[in-house]
Image (cartoon, rainbow, N blue to C red; front, side, top):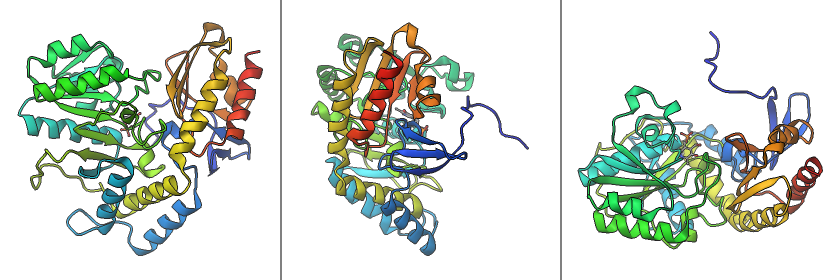
Length: 374
Ligand SMILES: Cc1ncc(COP(=O)(O)O)c(C=O)c1O
């Protein structure tokens, strides 16, 4: 058997990681400003994380959701405290798409409606409902196009309000910061007005914090820069620092009914241990504060570079839109300077490093960027 080849691969094989560094099998060292697609939150192979996971593996690797699991309740408590949603409940699953799938389902159960409003350029994952709410027909199959999702331009409040007033929508789903689109931060006033319109029309506000959450923006959730609250918040990526995991944070207005949601692997012992380790390290090492300050440092020092057409983002979620002459910059950073970055479209470099990125690491990137664009 061979692998079903759906990915464009670089010819590099990382075999070791530490903090913000990875090494390939030839021993070449790379600075990681991509974090394996915003997944590595506390840094590669953090000693607290590996110790806790090894110990858990020696005790019990897995048991199903048919038994008590104190790790789940501990995680829900710790997460609630750290993110400021203490009175919400947590449903655990295995990926970002699955978190959104469950959120959309829950909203429909709750409201009895089935339509969903999503943003143009949105990305919410590749499972059935999540991909239907993703504004990219190239990754939807006929099976996914059920006509349940209406896309509106982000930051156009009139377009959203007009549709929501029909009171036909079960949910409005929006990313805390649009990631795959190329890092677009929703306007503060827009999010505040959406919150109001959702409340007035009985629409569930789902905030997808899968990429922008878990401290990346310099607050636990990106939408917390605007003072609003979601009815449902979805998380994944950074929650497990590489251990596959997703979560749905659910407002107390929702009533849990036995059997309404479920999964075999969600909330298993290893996943919860990984997530507990992530929260512990984030707190002990003040990684959210670090994301805010190192992110600002990067943004301040990138400003004014002649290769940059537009600079967007907050914290350690930064989009560098390049002028056409610099389209090969991402590859040059990787192959000439050994710096991994993310991409979006043809001309956006996405910086999504581990949240422990130091100013000295940021300087290495800035020096490389300036050198390649001088
Ligand atoms: C905002 C957002 N939502 C959902 C997803 C899907 O997550 P997963 O790939 O874990 O299913 C992603 C992945 O990139 C994402 O960025």
